[in-house]
Length: 92
Image 1 (cartoon, rainbow, N blue to C red):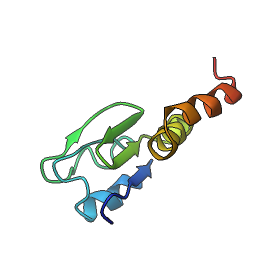
Image 2: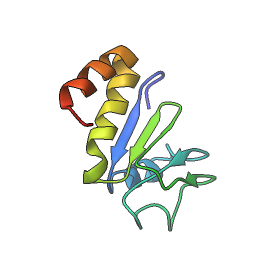
Image 3: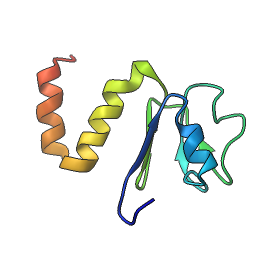
Image 4: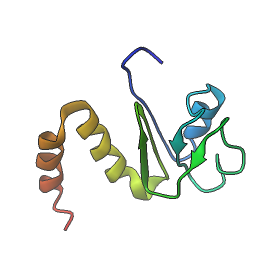
């Protein structure tokens, strides 16, 4: 991972982050059964739709894709942009 970069993965893709060592000593999530049975070294598996730990963002699956995308928007562009995008989605 490049200094200051973000690593993000959803569904089964967090397995790639495990293999690359990017989830060592991190909190993370994934599609059930993908990384919770064989976690990274010192990784804490969290059963939440989206988990952010420093520069690493993971998410559980297709049903969490909007939350994952909004988290990435906030991380990259800030809370104000996230709220603007989220309002346009009419989620609630």
